[in-house]
Length: 430
Image (tube, rainbow, N blue to C red; front, side, top):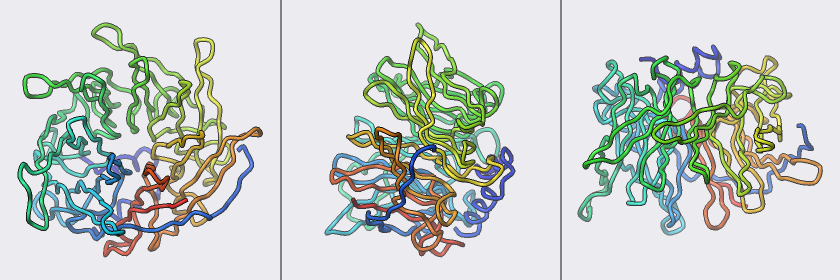
């Protein structure tokens, strides 16, 4: 099986993805625009490519105590199935004595336990950490089709410097049920898990799956197969419907789909098919939902600025109407992924926050804010990555803490020994 970077590079044939793969392998608008850097940007962890990991390909999850949880696609265990670059880690970052301390929770070994996590983790009602690995699992071929796992803290107090959590693989993908899980796994109120895979299924276009706890284990059910390489995660709306983005479904430029439960099956339909016009194309990031039932998301390419878009989908008269809120500036052909690939987050006054992969003032991505107003949405740059010590090329979502600080990751840069850095975790204070 090819690596995740190679897989998407084949779809786009872009130098950007090839460069990202090389870095990892080597080391491990429509509206008025305002640029300001009033916020304070700081790096709170530099990945070193060792037990802490390297190359975070997803953002963070925050618990009630303000601890940050995340994954690194590389680093951790080396040798054997992991080679010199490592099979990736799950970590926790805690604020102690006015500083941040990273604790590796688990290092993947590249076998049946999984390898190379590319998605956010989720924290279950039982306090355990749930997530997925893009590779590993001991099925399909030597690389594996990926896993869904859970991590639990040690049963007794740990007195050592490193206290790994206990991993349990709750599903190994085999191909027909999906290959390469991506996006955060989510729970419904009954404790069932839902997620998507980037490929596999019955026609190799990806699969939407459900994992049900049963008899002390988990049973997998494929809800829908072959849906245009779903890359982002799913959300559950108030009616129990599943909504998500499909990277190349619909007209070939991606879609937003909805799955409605109907007895023991699900009825699937497209809410919107992108045209690669001013609406953009190739939606990668997951969706978010506001209190009025409107959906918000992004496209990774296209749009009037050729750098992807941020959009709103509003239900109206039995249909969904798309409104493009902002178009980012990108390369002339518009087909290279430079726009947002991490999910948006909305604050309590309706402003949207996110990251872009490879645009911004230095071409290494950005952190942005979109503020609603009477004349449209105003763009504010919170940080433009340089690809140096501040990081670069974020695949990250953003999370708020109780003090309205923002946190995220950047996949390269920092001071780590990897070629062009091993990536960073950052904070933006208001």
